[in-house]
Image (tube, rainbow, N blue to C red; front, side, top):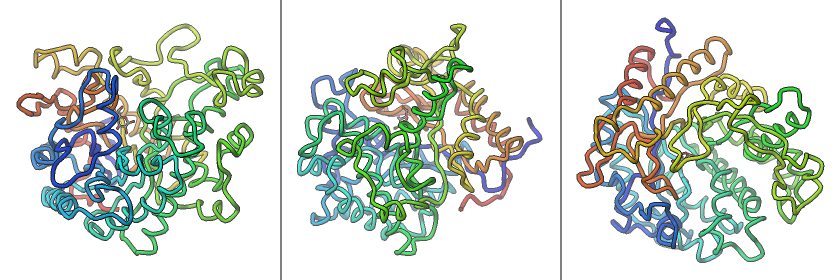
Length: 486
Ligand code: BGC
């Protein structure tokens, strides 16, 4: 589609996160995060690695940002490590000036290179001290500490950063902290079953309070959080159970953090009907009013969009039985169609299991978002793919020939163009995950998402085929001399 330009101001972005790329984990006054601790627990990562060094972007950021500029990338969405700004996390604990200065220098370098810096305040790396004090995000005490941290960051970087995110994928984060090893440090009265919902409540409260502070402080720019997941398609097109299962999946996976902010201000009705208040705290009428409208745009980490089916025991049997293994969601994700064909190319089977390349569903995915939670601007705040068997390869020429990832990006971007032109979706930016291979949480380095290969001995970054494909796609479709600021 060579004749379809992207809208003026469209962002060709890349995403990273502090824990996954920075390394320098004990340097310049940084406190430990919950993930620094988790990777040291037995079985914390599948390959036994930590992110103590990873890409060493804390020191090598100029290398990465210069490479971005050379590839024509015009924005970098990165996160700030809370434990670098407040090593102990708490509002009444000392600020670490070296941490403030580091991100200040890094932001300036981005601006100098013409790469817009976009900041996420929280990408899962809770200061460990707050987990030890009160159970991190499973306690409502976190709200005040998070607002204090956010205000410090807004004050330090306002004007230089104009697109902000409060949280990365709160739904994934709140599920994660209910599992080992995080579930050994929950707040009093919270257990692994209730933790995701108590966390969801505290995250919404923290997000809303931070956006209120952002607006009261008159910080120029836009703010939202990065949602994840998708609505999904009924596995058996004519099955009323599968159609209802899609609604259950939507409520629990994407509605949970969309409905309070972009919809009614309250939790999705299906969650309210399923979960007692001892699991999911209820919002008061005042809180519902405060929640609504606390985002300036909708950001979606749109990696995939798969089939959803009713659980094998049937919907009614599941919904009415709290001991059913599929309760409370009572739906299943299916990765193949009714004839047995895979929904799309599959990722590295040694690591990632949730992902498939599903460009054919991208337009539907964005249409569903726009129909359910309408907005004037959408960013695909992350999308990406881990190439099958890449981590098993040692020859560089085999690693850099990342054909499935390249195909993923090109087909998704083709569909993104059609979303804009044929469907009228207000898509204004896409952020590929990620500029270089990095520490993929509990998979360590066994799952690779980089458009550049990382040599762990020399820390050299080598572009893969997908880096050039992305660069060429945007060179062909971006309008020249358009400003990327909101
Ligand atoms: C997360 C990233 C992660 C990526 C690939 C997203 O869910 O925000 O931190 O590395 O997916 O799994």
